[in-house]
Image (cartoon, rainbow, N blue to C red; front, side, top):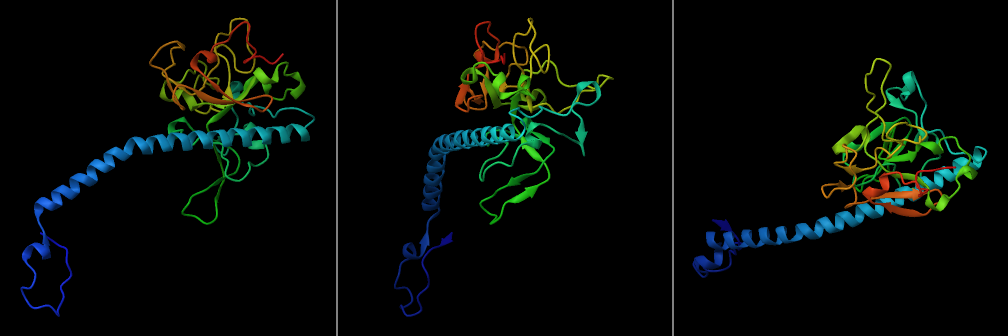
Length: 278
């Protein structure tokens, strides 16, 4: 039994019946049942609100990163930053266990922005060299971290290229949602490896090609590491494909406008400019 009414000393003993002093087990079951039903009904609403919040956060991140890349180019002779610092066998060179990438060298992002999409899971994320801020509603001041959590890749052919080299900026992807090291079945046929063949498990910072990392070839058919899950076999035309944002990944184009990519946009078209520079 659960006690409900407070005992009042001034009232004569027995002035209230038992039903006024206690809640029956049946009443408890009814209340618990109603609360459970309301909680179940709230789940879809929570999911919708979470998806919309994640989308807004991701768009904000991409916009802030794009502006930071523009600032970098203004300082460094109108050129994009290098995609990464290469080491053995062309694999990323590690500094204190983390690769130095384009995200490591551009100016700090504006307040509230992050290099990590809020919809991304830990397995999709790569830590790269640099500093970032971790914000929480429970902390008055953001916590400064000695690494960057990254879930966005930069289009590899843009590395150290002049901004003016981009022939069609409005149709050329600069940044997009990526996942690290083939996480969740992401297409990644050419992970970085050392000379002995040992794979280096850090690559989400770069959008490369199926047969080359930094530049396409006449045989290139698709780009790698975009956050389309279940595409490890290179098939981007099937119903089972999921993604970070309900069938799409988000992108920023070279002219700074926001866009979305469907799975078929991961393939290289002879007539499209999406994956070309000049």
